[in-house]
Length: 264
Ligand code: MLT
Image (tube, rainbow, N blue to C red; front, side, top):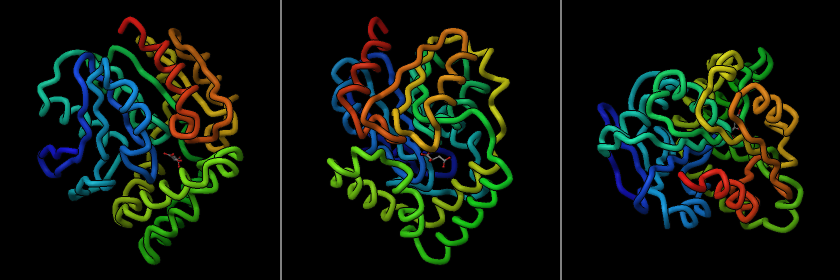
């Protein structure tokens, strides 16, 4: 891991390999380590960048409100700091996908392709917003443990619960290592994110939409609907996986991503 200074914050980033840039953007309330199997696999022919978003992992939180747009601005600033002018492939999971819509809206000219994993285009319902505010208050009062308890049962599919308890425990450790302030700021940012549905028809870069077959947060039917609205999108279902498809079934996920990246 190295750190890169942006205007108001230091971001930690895994920067491995050479070649076209593959930017991996983690979900909530995690950090770059959820992409370990993809970093290992694709850094043999890509320059894989896997940052910790502000407020997560080894990155500072900075000051002021956190929004999906602000995370996207951080990622663009990070590319600038690393002198990356060539178009990149952006791959984001869940909250990393919410940020992808903002990145597309503001920085489309920097994109050669998009990979949207286990994410949603719709905004939060009033009920979901209220749930996020309630969780943020609990996290700030009781610590990151409250986020681990709320999120872990939703992140993993039944097969991981049975066969890979160690993956769940590693993820718990990542969540516990994140600061309550960073987690609460992200919850607020997700609650305030705009609906991206109207953007989908205008996305004109090659796009891969991937979802775990047991994903309950961003269910396969909803993700298939996203793929159908994006003109150049392919859709792939990852077996034996829930919401954390790249981590739960890296063999199937990497095969799908590898096919999409072939020739790039
Ligand atoms: C994530 O994985 O980033 C979160 O589940 C997204 C969300 O809570 O909407």
